[in-house]
Amino acid sequence: MRKLRTPEDRFVELPDFDLEPGYAEVPDGEGGSLRMAYVAAGPVDGPPVLLLHGEPTWAFLYRKMIPVLADAGLRAVAPDLVGFGRSDKPAELADHSYARHVEWVRTLVFDVLDLRELTLVGQDWGGLIGLRLVAEHPDRFARVVAANTGLPTGDVDMPEVWWQFRRAVQKAGAADALDIGRLVLSGCQRGLDQAARSAYDAPFPDGSYKAGPRVMPTILPTRPDDPATEANRAALATLRELSLPFLCPFSDGDPITGGMAPILKRTMPGAVGRDHPTITGAGHFLQEDAGPELARVVADFVKGS
Image (tube, rainbow, N blue to C red):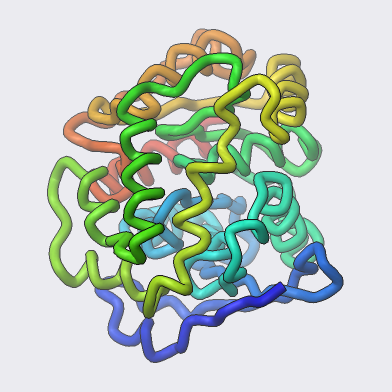
Protein backbone atom coordinates (compact mmCIF):
# COMPACT_ATOMS: atom_id res chain seq x y z
CA MET A 1 0.00 0.00 0.00
CA ARG A 2 1.39 3.35 -1.02
CA LYS A 3 0.70 5.93 1.66
CA LEU A 4 1.28 9.66 2.05
CA ARG A 5 1.90 11.63 5.24
CA THR A 6 1.03 15.31 5.44
CA PRO A 7 4.03 17.43 6.51
CA GLU A 8 3.71 18.73 10.07
CA ASP A 9 4.22 22.33 8.98
CA ARG A 10 0.80 22.21 7.34
CA PHE A 11 -0.71 22.16 10.85
CA VAL A 12 1.07 25.18 12.32
CA GLU A 13 -1.09 27.90 13.93
CA LEU A 14 -4.43 26.20 13.56
CA PRO A 15 -7.17 28.50 14.91
CA ASP A 16 -8.35 27.48 18.40
CA PHE A 17 -6.81 24.04 18.06
CA ASP A 18 -3.45 23.79 19.78
CA LEU A 19 -3.84 20.31 21.30
CA GLU A 20 -0.76 18.14 20.94
CA PRO A 21 -1.59 15.11 18.80
CA GLY A 22 -0.88 11.53 19.75
CA TYR A 23 0.05 8.89 17.20
CA ALA A 24 -0.36 5.13 16.95
CA GLU A 25 0.44 2.47 14.36
CA VAL A 26 -2.38 0.24 13.12
CA PRO A 27 -2.18 -2.63 10.60
CA ASP A 28 -3.03 -1.46 7.10
CA GLY A 29 -4.60 -4.78 6.09
CA GLU A 30 -1.84 -5.60 3.62
CA GLY A 31 1.02 -6.54 5.93
CA GLY A 32 2.17 -3.00 6.65
CA SER A 33 1.02 -0.29 9.02
CA LEU A 34 -0.57 3.14 9.04
CA ARG A 35 -0.05 5.97 11.48
CA MET A 36 -3.27 7.28 12.99
CA ALA A 37 -3.47 10.57 14.85
CA TYR A 38 -5.75 11.65 17.68
CA VAL A 39 -6.11 14.43 20.22
CA ALA A 40 -7.34 14.13 23.78
CA ALA A 41 -8.27 16.57 26.53
CA GLY A 42 -9.89 16.48 29.96
CA PRO A 43 -9.18 14.42 33.06
CA VAL A 44 -7.39 11.17 32.25
CA ASP A 45 -9.77 9.33 34.58
CA GLY A 46 -12.87 11.14 33.34
CA PRO A 47 -15.65 9.31 31.48
CA PRO A 48 -14.29 8.89 27.93
CA VAL A 49 -16.14 10.43 25.00
CA LEU A 50 -15.15 9.23 21.53
CA LEU A 51 -15.61 11.99 18.95
CA LEU A 52 -15.69 10.57 15.42
CA HIS A 53 -15.71 12.94 12.44
CA GLY A 54 -16.82 12.22 8.89
CA GLU A 55 -16.32 13.31 5.29
CA PRO A 56 -14.28 15.45 4.49
CA THR A 57 -13.32 16.80 7.92
CA TRP A 58 -10.90 15.78 10.70
CA ALA A 59 -10.57 16.18 14.47
CA PHE A 60 -10.36 19.95 13.97
CA LEU A 61 -14.15 19.77 13.55
CA TYR A 62 -14.48 19.17 17.31
CA ARG A 63 -12.35 22.11 18.46
CA LYS A 64 -15.41 24.01 19.77
CA MET A 65 -16.68 20.98 21.68
CA ILE A 66 -13.54 19.56 23.26
CA PRO A 67 -12.98 22.40 25.79
CA VAL A 68 -16.62 22.26 26.94
CA LEU A 69 -16.45 18.49 27.41
CA ALA A 70 -13.10 18.71 29.21
CA ASP A 71 -14.40 21.45 31.54
CA ALA A 72 -17.33 19.16 32.37
CA GLY A 73 -14.87 16.52 33.61
CA LEU A 74 -15.05 14.27 30.56
CA ARG A 75 -12.13 12.77 28.65
CA ALA A 76 -12.63 13.84 25.03
CA VAL A 77 -10.78 11.73 22.45
CA ALA A 78 -10.96 12.73 18.78
CA PRO A 79 -9.14 10.56 16.20
CA ASP A 80 -8.41 11.44 12.60
CA LEU A 81 -9.78 8.77 10.28
CA VAL A 82 -7.24 7.18 7.98
CA GLY A 83 -6.98 9.40 4.91
CA PHE A 84 -7.85 12.55 6.88
CA GLY A 85 -6.22 15.06 9.18
CA ARG A 86 -2.81 14.09 10.50
CA SER A 87 -3.40 10.38 9.88
CA ASP A 88 -1.65 8.61 7.00
CA LYS A 89 -3.34 8.75 3.62
CA PRO A 90 -3.49 5.62 1.46
CA ALA A 91 -2.97 6.97 -2.03
CA GLU A 92 -5.24 4.70 -4.06
CA LEU A 93 -9.03 4.71 -3.99
CA ALA A 94 -9.01 0.91 -3.83
CA ASP A 95 -7.08 1.03 -0.54
CA HIS A 96 -10.24 2.25 1.20
CA SER A 97 -13.26 0.17 2.15
CA TYR A 98 -15.97 0.51 4.77
CA ALA A 99 -14.70 -2.61 6.55
CA ARG A 100 -11.13 -1.31 6.64
CA HIS A 101 -12.17 2.01 8.14
CA VAL A 102 -14.13 0.24 10.86
CA GLU A 103 -11.14 -1.97 11.63
CA TRP A 104 -8.65 0.91 11.65
CA VAL A 105 -10.73 2.82 14.20
CA ARG A 106 -11.37 -0.33 16.24
CA THR A 107 -7.66 -1.05 16.47
CA LEU A 108 -6.82 2.48 17.60
CA VAL A 109 -9.63 2.86 20.11
CA PHE A 110 -9.64 -0.63 21.64
CA ASP A 111 -6.26 -2.27 21.02
CA VAL A 112 -4.06 0.81 21.39
CA LEU A 113 -5.95 3.27 23.61
CA ASP A 114 -7.93 0.53 25.44
CA LEU A 115 -10.95 2.79 25.92
CA ARG A 116 -13.93 1.40 27.83
CA GLU A 117 -17.29 2.65 29.07
CA LEU A 118 -17.30 4.91 26.06
CA THR A 119 -19.79 7.49 24.97
CA LEU A 120 -19.82 7.53 21.18
CA VAL A 121 -20.40 10.88 19.48
CA GLY A 122 -20.69 10.14 15.77
CA GLN A 123 -21.55 12.50 12.93
CA ASP A 124 -21.61 11.69 9.22
CA TRP A 125 -19.11 8.82 8.66
CA GLY A 126 -18.30 9.04 12.35
CA GLY A 127 -21.70 7.49 12.95
CA LEU A 128 -21.43 4.98 10.13
CA ILE A 129 -18.19 3.71 11.63
CA GLY A 130 -19.04 4.28 15.27
CA LEU A 131 -22.42 2.54 15.19
CA ARG A 132 -20.78 -0.50 13.66
CA LEU A 133 -18.32 -0.54 16.56
CA VAL A 134 -21.14 -0.24 19.09
CA ALA A 135 -23.00 -3.15 17.53
CA GLU A 136 -19.91 -5.34 17.21
CA HIS A 137 -18.41 -4.45 20.62
CA PRO A 138 -21.30 -3.36 22.87
CA ASP A 139 -19.36 -4.20 26.02
CA ARG A 140 -17.06 -1.24 25.30
CA PHE A 141 -19.81 1.39 25.22
CA ALA A 142 -21.95 3.06 27.87
CA ARG A 143 -24.11 5.26 25.64
CA VAL A 144 -24.49 6.63 22.10
CA VAL A 145 -24.92 10.12 20.67
CA ALA A 146 -25.86 9.99 16.98
CA ALA A 147 -25.84 13.49 15.48
CA ASN A 148 -26.61 13.97 11.78
CA THR A 149 -25.77 10.39 10.89
CA GLY A 150 -27.25 6.94 10.43
CA LEU A 151 -26.44 3.41 9.32
CA PRO A 152 -27.55 2.93 5.69
CA THR A 153 -27.86 -0.52 4.20
CA GLY A 154 -28.70 0.33 0.60
CA ASP A 155 -32.24 -0.99 1.03
CA VAL A 156 -33.58 2.59 1.00
CA ASP A 157 -32.32 5.13 -1.52
CA MET A 158 -30.27 8.10 -0.35
CA PRO A 159 -31.83 11.57 -0.84
CA GLU A 160 -31.19 13.34 -4.13
CA VAL A 161 -29.10 16.02 -2.42
CA TRP A 162 -26.66 13.31 -1.35
CA TRP A 163 -26.43 11.96 -4.90
CA GLN A 164 -25.68 15.50 -6.08
CA PHE A 165 -22.89 15.68 -3.50
CA ARG A 166 -21.48 12.32 -4.63
CA ARG A 167 -21.51 13.36 -8.28
CA ALA A 168 -19.80 16.66 -7.44
CA VAL A 169 -17.06 14.89 -5.48
CA GLN A 170 -16.44 12.37 -8.24
CA LYS A 171 -16.35 15.05 -10.93
CA ALA A 172 -14.03 17.33 -8.94
CA GLY A 173 -11.83 14.43 -7.90
CA ALA A 174 -11.29 13.30 -11.44
CA ALA A 175 -10.20 16.82 -12.31
CA ASP A 176 -8.01 17.09 -9.17
CA ALA A 177 -10.10 20.09 -8.14
CA LEU A 178 -11.81 18.84 -4.98
CA ASP A 179 -12.10 21.93 -2.73
CA ILE A 180 -12.25 20.55 0.82
CA GLY A 181 -12.79 23.89 2.55
CA ARG A 182 -15.64 24.72 0.20
CA LEU A 183 -17.30 21.36 0.85
CA VAL A 184 -17.25 22.00 4.59
CA LEU A 185 -18.55 25.54 4.09
CA SER A 186 -21.45 24.19 2.05
CA GLY A 187 -22.51 22.09 5.05
CA CYS A 188 -22.55 25.03 7.48
CA GLN A 189 -25.43 27.44 8.04
CA ARG A 190 -23.49 30.03 10.03
CA GLY A 191 -20.54 30.41 7.68
CA LEU A 192 -16.89 29.48 7.98
CA ASP A 193 -14.05 32.00 8.14
CA GLN A 194 -10.97 31.75 5.97
CA ALA A 195 -8.74 30.50 8.79
CA ALA A 196 -11.06 27.56 9.42
CA ARG A 197 -11.38 26.82 5.71
CA SER A 198 -7.60 26.74 5.47
CA ALA A 199 -7.46 24.33 8.41
CA TYR A 200 -9.76 21.93 6.58
CA ASP A 201 -7.55 22.22 3.50
CA ALA A 202 -4.35 21.71 5.53
CA PRO A 203 -4.25 17.87 5.48
CA PHE A 204 -4.22 17.84 1.68
CA PRO A 205 -1.19 19.59 0.11
CA ASP A 206 -2.32 18.49 -3.35
CA GLY A 207 -4.78 16.18 -5.05
CA SER A 208 -2.67 13.07 -4.50
CA TYR A 209 -3.53 13.23 -0.78
CA LYS A 210 -7.31 13.29 -1.36
CA ALA A 211 -8.12 9.63 -2.00
CA GLY A 212 -10.00 9.49 1.32
CA PRO A 213 -12.38 12.39 0.65
CA ARG A 214 -12.83 11.23 -2.94
CA VAL A 215 -13.69 7.65 -2.12
CA MET A 216 -15.91 7.92 0.97
CA PRO A 217 -19.14 8.69 -0.96
CA THR A 218 -18.53 5.65 -3.16
CA ILE A 219 -18.09 3.11 -0.34
CA LEU A 220 -21.30 4.07 1.47
CA PRO A 221 -23.80 1.27 0.76
CA THR A 222 -26.39 2.52 -1.73
CA ARG A 223 -27.79 -0.76 -3.03
CA PRO A 224 -28.90 -4.02 -1.38
CA ASP A 225 -25.97 -6.01 -2.81
CA ASP A 226 -23.28 -3.57 -1.68
CA PRO A 227 -20.24 -5.23 0.02
CA ALA A 228 -21.06 -3.40 3.28
CA THR A 229 -24.79 -4.08 3.30
CA GLU A 230 -24.84 -7.37 5.21
CA ALA A 231 -22.54 -6.06 7.96
CA ASN A 232 -24.72 -2.96 8.37
CA ARG A 233 -27.91 -5.02 8.43
CA ALA A 234 -26.40 -7.21 11.12
CA ALA A 235 -25.30 -4.14 13.08
CA LEU A 236 -28.79 -2.64 12.92
CA ALA A 237 -30.32 -5.89 14.11
CA THR A 238 -27.98 -5.90 17.11
CA LEU A 239 -28.52 -2.22 17.89
CA ARG A 240 -32.28 -2.79 17.93
CA GLU A 241 -31.75 -5.24 20.79
CA LEU A 242 -29.40 -3.09 22.88
CA SER A 243 -30.67 -1.00 25.77
CA LEU A 244 -27.76 1.46 25.75
CA PRO A 245 -28.94 5.05 26.32
CA PHE A 246 -29.21 6.56 22.84
CA LEU A 247 -29.53 10.27 22.02
CA CYS A 248 -30.21 11.88 18.62
CA PRO A 249 -29.41 15.61 18.75
CA PHE A 250 -29.81 16.31 15.03
CA SER A 251 -29.68 19.78 13.56
CA ASP A 252 -32.69 21.41 11.90
CA GLY A 253 -30.82 22.20 8.67
CA ASP A 254 -29.34 19.02 7.23
CA PRO A 255 -31.18 17.69 4.16
CA ILE A 256 -28.75 14.75 3.89
CA THR A 257 -29.32 13.02 7.23
CA GLY A 258 -32.49 14.65 8.56
CA GLY A 259 -34.66 11.71 7.53
CA MET A 260 -32.57 9.32 9.62
CA ALA A 261 -33.42 10.98 12.95
CA PRO A 262 -37.01 9.69 13.30
CA ILE A 263 -35.92 6.19 12.30
CA LEU A 264 -33.25 6.06 15.00
CA LYS A 265 -35.57 7.56 17.62
CA ARG A 266 -38.21 4.95 16.81
CA THR A 267 -36.04 1.85 16.45
CA MET A 268 -33.24 2.21 19.00
CA PRO A 269 -34.53 0.93 22.38
CA GLY A 270 -32.40 3.38 24.32
CA ALA A 271 -33.82 6.28 22.33
CA VAL A 272 -37.52 5.52 22.73
CA GLY A 273 -39.27 7.93 25.09
CA ARG A 274 -36.21 10.13 25.45
CA ASP A 275 -36.20 13.91 24.91
CA HIS A 276 -34.01 14.45 21.84
CA PRO A 277 -32.96 18.09 21.47
CA THR A 278 -32.92 19.73 18.05
CA ILE A 279 -29.89 21.91 17.38
CA THR A 280 -31.44 24.93 15.68
CA GLY A 281 -29.78 27.13 13.07
CA ALA A 282 -27.21 24.46 12.21
CA GLY A 283 -26.38 22.56 9.03
CA HIS A 284 -24.79 19.21 8.34
CA PHE A 285 -21.65 20.15 10.28
CA LEU A 286 -23.43 21.07 13.49
CA GLN A 287 -20.11 20.93 15.36
CA GLU A 288 -19.08 24.02 13.38
CA ASP A 289 -22.40 25.83 13.63
CA ALA A 290 -23.24 24.99 17.23
CA GLY A 291 -20.32 23.14 18.78
CA PRO A 292 -20.60 24.44 22.36
CA GLU A 293 -24.35 23.79 22.40
CA LEU A 294 -23.90 20.23 21.17
CA ALA A 295 -21.10 19.68 23.70
CA ARG A 296 -23.36 20.77 26.55
CA VAL A 297 -26.02 18.36 25.31
CA VAL A 298 -23.44 15.55 25.32
CA ALA A 299 -22.12 16.45 28.78
CA ASP A 300 -25.64 16.56 30.27
CA PHE A 301 -26.46 13.22 28.63
CA VAL A 302 -23.36 11.56 30.10
CA LYS A 303 -24.07 12.88 33.57
CA GLY A 304 -27.76 12.08 33.39
CA SER A 305 -27.56 8.54 32.07
